[in-house]
Image 1 (tube, rainbow, N blue to C red):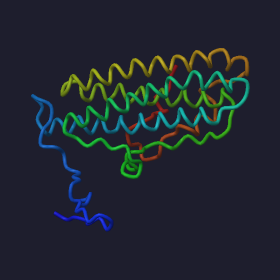
Image 2 (image 1 turned 30 degrees about the vertical axis):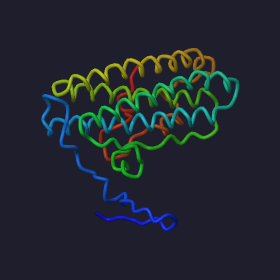
Image 3 (image 1 turned 45 degrees about the vertical axis):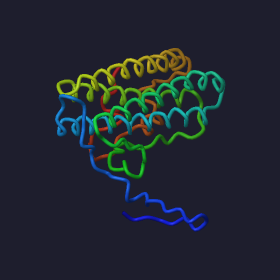
Image 4 (image 1 turned 120 degrees about the vertical axis):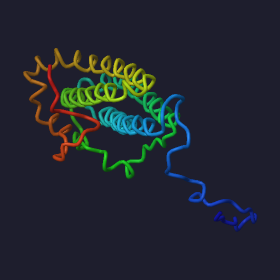
Length: 218
């Protein structure tokens, strides 16, 4: 085993590379085969990436919203951010429980990052919430698809995703309710908001994961 000697106190410590493994653990949940555990892990890893991106999107809006709802929108979104962060931990821990290696590092997940980043900077609440409406539609749609993907393999993971989907749909309702009056007052149609569409459009490779705008419907 490779090691490094501390130049100050002479302590010998193993190198990080020698104790780090990218391989699946030798165990998974009881009654699941390792192959099935890997299959569920792959589904959950994609949901982990999407939830991390959602948390960053919520903060992006918090930092950049201006106008009459400068206080109100962050007050609505702060609890949502905290709730999504908790979901991230739950999904990551489930992956580890199944013997997988949860990874939240963007550089390692770039191939699965199949959507364009939100390109809204400073904007009023309507612009940001129209974009967030589309983001939630995509995340919820993909969470539901993930529920179906693991339903016959691992009911515990399905239950986790089901609970999270219910909370995400509640958060989405808050956003939609805020927009239902505001969009009419401003003469806007949120589904046709060009800025929001630019925020959430998928890459052209058609791969699945994260957020979907092509499933947006009322």
